[in-house]
Length: 578
Image (cartoon, rainbow, N blue to C red):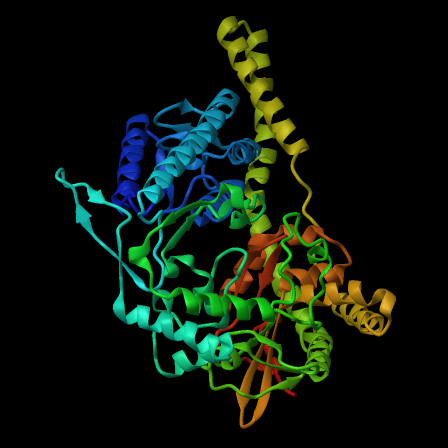
């Protein structure tokens, strides 16, 4: 039996050796049982409460569908996941792929383990969170930090009589405290947070965590108490439980939520004061004057879900010098955000919004789906799919060839039975062959039909659909939908300054383009994901997941002209001048 081993440890307090220990114990069990270990997967310092951001587990699930192993072996079920929904989902996927699950603690996993252990693990996580919060609250009420460290302070490392670390002690960092007071004074004098950040970066002053200063690092969010100007610890007031964090079930990311003020825990720590009260009050007064709205919205802003991008390709345009985003700097111009907000990028070449949109639309229409190149891609894709199908079809061919042999063996046994051979032995052999014949017949009957391949005429259909979308952009009633479709086709637009001009590097989303050209949300040919992976791997491409849909991007680290495309890829970066 072919076995894949999975191991995980969840926090920085554990060690990489934990992974090695899990692998070693699982290998010993596999050797004892006579199992062949063919793959090993691991996730380092990643929580088991979500499976979305765990590359090792995601690779395990993908490979299970490809038949690379017959069983998953782990130390315990909670190493695979502690989340009830995830455990059930993983188990369901493994059952569908005919892959068993086995752990050293529970043995072979069944529906009973999934239900009971999933519930126990979920309760364990909740109980652990409650105990952690109780401990943190006690630390706050004792005037110590509840976790993390603010700019302007150093962590004090001390140990008790038994050698255990004493946590939560902080001391003022004099050099950083001077920067904090300077930021407050500059803001009170009328400077903007962006001007302050650019000055600090120009002088080479390292920001929090050693990173560059940005406007949001300074002004933050008043209601949430984030940012240098809103940290009440600077006036000797320790506030805890202002925010709570929950995980988005769709992305696995932690999202902060503002708690009611009645739930905050506040403790005075005058020895931690950095900013005098008069300066703090002056800054708060100026913030109040500049704020366009101070009304809290505990229910959230209903308009947030209806916001539209500021321009057609907002969020997709990147600076070729620093990698930062290009954003609107006036009604019609886009510029490098890093250059304007932090001053750490020298790219000051701006671009008109309408000119950029027209150029990208032209690139989508003329460069990303040229008919001749797409025909080459179709040929290579078809060749690769057929090769993979031949490999996958080898088992089907063997089963088809085995059926006639079984019929011949049954005929021989029937003749032997008529000739007076040993009845019981012959009957047993006939039963075995009949069972094997029934098994093969069922497998062949349930074998999936191969999906249809790409049609070379798809490039012409793509060009026609792009032209229709461009026309729809001109009409108010159809603009929003057309813009959403066009944005989905673009993976990234990079603007590279060259001689006072901008070269535009357009990267298309291969999967989205193929779906769009086929006119289907999930065309059958995209189920041949392994063929796409292989073709992209030949030219340095990559497939990557993104929120809400699978994006397939053909990316190159260097710019490639449209004339030098590798046959079978056809969707590499296209460079053209504005």
